[in-house]
Amino acid sequence: SSVTNDAPATFPVGTTPVTWTVTDVNGNINICQHDVIVTDTGAPVINCPPAITVSCITEVPNPYADYSAFEVAGGSATDNVGIDESSFALVSEVDDMLTCPKTITRTYKIADTGGEEATCSQLIIVHDQTAPVITTIAGSLDRNISCDDATGLQDALALEPVAIDNCATPVISLVSDV
Image (cartoon, rainbow, N blue to C red; front, side, top):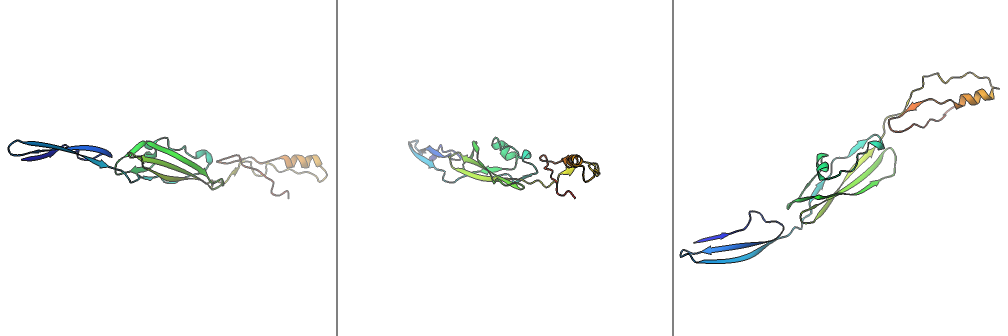
């Protein structure tokens, strides 16, 4: 006698019919069928890549275009029934509206093959710690004028040093005229 079935090694989410065949020693056969129903009630687990710190707003990378780019950057997602990579998406991007440092929070989501979703958030911190550099040669803006030379005084006050910055055009202001 023998008992056999056509059940798969693992069952996918959903309904899978399983057929049982029983054969006795005389060759008599009986067949019956039942359904195995697998449901997915557990959300996937998603881990965002680590926080990114840049100096300038122009250095903020674009959001991840797809799950593959997300993984290359250090992100991951797992689930007991499988991940639907095509469901990967940027949900939101929130800017704290501060400056130096500025924090941008990007929230991503992914679903498993059963439709359950999970999210994670990645921080992007913009923090310029490089001071601007004055490139004007010291003393090159010095002028000797007499107290009654109004035009010379205006001309001297109109002179500005040249400066560069790694992120933006620096603001130059007169701190003292003494």
